[in-house]
Structure formats: C-alpha cells, structure tokens
Amino acid sequence: MSQRTERRGIHVDQSDLLCKKGCGYYGNAAWQGLCSKCWREEYQRVRQKQIQDDWALAEKLQREEEAAYASSHGAHSQANTPQQHPGHTSLGPFSKFEEKKTNEKTRKVTTVKKFFSPSSRTASKKETQEGKTTSPSISRHASFDTDQVSRDFLEFLKNLQKPGREIHKQCRAFLVNMSSKKDLSADELSECVQDFYQGLADRLMSHFKGSSESVEQVMDQVEKYIMTRLYKSVFCPETTDDENKDLATQNRIRALHWVTIQMLCVSMDEEIPEVSENVVKAITDIIEMDSKRVPRDKLACITRCSKHIFSAIRITKNEPASADDFLPALIYIVLKANPPRLQSNIQYITRFCNPSRLMTGEDGYYFTNLCCAAAFIEKLDAQSLNLSLEEFERYMSGQASPRCSSSEGEWPHSGPEVRVAATNPVLAQLNHNLELLSGLSSRQEALMEAAQSLQADLLLWTQSVQQEVHDILEKYPLEGLSSTVSAIDTNNMDNNNLPSPLKPQVFAS
Image (tube, rainbow, N blue to C red; front, top):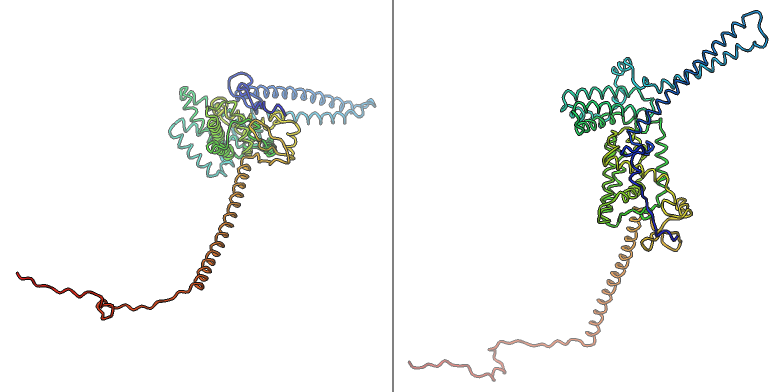
C-alpha cells in the first residue's frame, strides 16, 4: 500500500473537547457533548416539557373518561325505558368496555405523572420520620472503609464547629432520603445528588464569603462521605445497561489485541527503560480506578495515568508532549490495560462527581480525553488505522497478525515466510526472553560438551604420559652404584698422597 508512509495518526481538535454550546467548559460524550451545567439545563427543559405533555395527556384522557361515563349513564337510562330502540341494545356493554379502557389509560398516565412529578423525588414528612426510626440498609451493612470514612468526615467537621454540625445533619438527612428512592433511574439519582451538591455549595459559598477554595475542600469531604455510603446502590445500577456496555467494551478491546503502537502513531519508545516503567505505571493506575469508591479518587487515578503518559512521551521525544501526542497514547494504554468496568466507571464519575471538577482543570481535561478514547475504540476501523479493509478484517478474525516492519515507516503485512512478531508488548517481551533462554541453553550445551571433551583429553594425556615413562624405564633400566663414605682422617691409601700436617713453630721473643 503506497500510502502507508503518509500515516495520519489520531488527531482530535481541542475545540471538540469543549461543550457544544460554547460555554468554554469541557464536554462529555455521555452528556451528548455538553458540559454538566448545560446538560442539566437541557435535561430540566426536556423533563419539564415531558411533564407538561403528561399533564396534557392526562387531562385529555380525563375528559374522554367523563364523556364515556356520561355516555354510559345515558345508555343505561335509555335501557330502563319501556320503549327502546333495537339498535341500542349493545350500547351498555360497549360503554363499559370504553370506560374500562379509559380508566386503564388514566391509571397509567397518573403513574407516569407521579413518577416525573417533583413530589415523588422528595420524601414526605411521615416517610422521613419512619426513616429516622430505622437506619438505612446501606448504614446497617457498612464496611470497614465506610466506617473509616465516616470517622474522618466527623473529624474534619469538628474544625468547622457549628457549620460542621449543620453539614453533618444535612448529609445524614440526605442519605436517609436517598434510601427511600432506590426505584429511581440512574439519571434521577444523579439529579438528586447534583441538586444536593449545588444547594450545599451555595450555602457554603455564603458562609465562607466567596472563598471557593474553602468551599471546594468541604465539598470534597462531603462527596467522599456521601458517595462511599451510596456506592453499592448507585454504581452500575440494575436500571441501566452499564454492565452490557462493559462487556461489549471488554470484548471489543480483546478483539483489538493486535493493534500496534505504530498503527496508532504513538510517540513512545518502550525499549527505553524509563518509558517502559511509565507505561506500566499508567496501566496500573487506569486499572486501579475500578477499586475506588469516590468519584474524586477515580479521577485521581485517571490523572496519574495521564501524567505517566506525558512523562513517557517527553522522555521519548526529549521535548514537552503535546495534546496531539496524548490522545493516541491514552488509547494505546487503554487497549493494553483493558480496564475492568470501564463504561460503568465513566458513567459513575459523570453522574455523581462534583460537576466543577469535570468542567474545568486538569481532572476535567484528562477525563474528557478518556471518554474520547473509549468512544474511539468503539468506532475503530480500518481507515482509523490507515489499513486496507482486507487487512483489518484478517486481523480482526485472527487469520493474520501484523509483524514487525523491517524498516521504520513501513507497515506490516502478512506473509508465511516471515516471522510473525507479537504485537502485545508483554508477549513481545516474553518472546524476547524465550529467545534469550534458548540462546543460553545452546551455549550451556556447547560448554558442557567442551568440558566433557577436556576431561576426556586430560585422562588420555595422563595415561599417555604414564605409558611413555614406563616404556623409557624398560628401555633404559637404572643401574645403582655402591659407594662407601669414609671420614677425612681415616687411614687409607688415598691419604698417603696428602701433604704432611703443619706443625706449629716457636719463635724467640
């Protein structure tokens, strides 16, 4: 394919990450590209319109019911008169049928009206009193982590004194109120929590006289306390299809296991130890997100993961990473990690996180990019990876796998005569280690053969030396000569040839 050298990569305009209404805040795919503020306004507008339509439908059905009731009474009175027209003999049963049908419609509409009416979302005083006598089930079965969070929350509120007691009272009342709303949908539960956040933040803003930093600290603690206790009932609720989306995303990522770092044009070189270490840390952080209960803690995992990605890109390029480099790298990390319950975690953060964190700041930016990465993976196709449709289908079906290109910039293509390399870095490292072990095994076998050969040579050399010595001794036997050693002053014939001993001479003095 001649166009493979002109690889486009993945590029998302930064303006696409912002709210579609142009408010300047970060948007979210779960909110149809709107920020949390604009989404709530749009949701309230649509919901108010739906309530008005339901009321109009209910009034219409009520009028039809009254008309049917009046018609049935008129038919009944005519049936009791002695002069009855033969054609009206079946009017009574038909009117009863219409009345029954109308009552059924009215009952359904009334149920819908109650479901969407504001009164259904606030517990009555009687229900509140009953709720106070019995603690919520989420409190009865609180775990150790929940108890620890409650103690930390109380310790934090002690520093606020009187406002702290009021905040704790409101949080407790809100939890009791939420325990009676288990049948609400996820969006309605989210709206209840967001309304509580907004109301409490407004009151705190007036108390702290506009100090946004103090308000944010209190709201962080409130969010931690509230969402830790509500986690089991609001995370991936049965009223949503979050679980099915999780399974679909996991299966999709498994099917895309063959996507290489070159296909995504990621500016990271995993052969560099520091880069590889940052990649592993990023994968660990994105997986750890599922173990957290508080939306803010989940966002913190995403932020740490993103910072490790930026570090890996910076080390590879020896220059600061750009936004265009970040998104392909984040997609690559998500494909490698295949985080558990990715869609449920994204929806949980979207629904129950403090909206100010998602609208601005680095947390909001990184979270918006993660949503874009998840959406890109769902729509990944041959054109996105600059592959032909035939190659993409072969890779997806498992009939072929991309191999390492022989030169930079050349895309891999299938071929039975060339070694197929693992595209997953973990598998690639495993193959590399196996090759090293195979080489070490061959070298060890050669060393053992050389050692055994040397041992055999030493044995032969020893035997050959012994044989040569034995042959020489047989050919030239040793003859021993006997000799006696005598003292120097012994009388023998040889001493006669010695000069006479010196005699001392005396000289006259």
